[in-house]
Length: 212
Figure 1: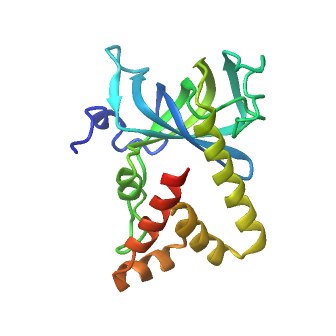
Figure 2: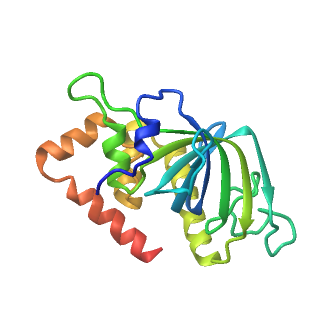
């Protein structure tokens, strides 16, 4: 797939470019002091270019504790307090349509041969840009509790595995059971690729996703 024309503005901007991004949350991951939200059906408006929104394949946004979250309430009456929420403390649910304001940036490419290529990895899972959000506004609350509950289960399984196993084993278990390679150490991933069995991780994750 050819890169979007927005790349001509983001290329070389190591600190990112000020933008407003609109999309639908399809995945949420909790980190130590922030959350990552993945957006589909995404578009972006750049502050330095007055024009129609650019279409973007996908965005992974980091939402830190300092970012403001506002918007429409969920069925429970308060944004994000639904039992189906996977990020209740930030008021965000799977399926929410949101507007993010902050910095849009391209993923890094390795400076040394053989290094981890973040750009290639995220493009392989349908994510074109990273985003550092200063604010998040929910403009349409998600309605699919089944999807949210499924993601909530995956998140809890991930957290449990990280508590009972070391980083190396937890990353491998998460990859095999849930199909999420984000926590898989690079040397393990490379070992599977060189052995020609990396497809086993993808197949296992696919089965779990189908069940979810």
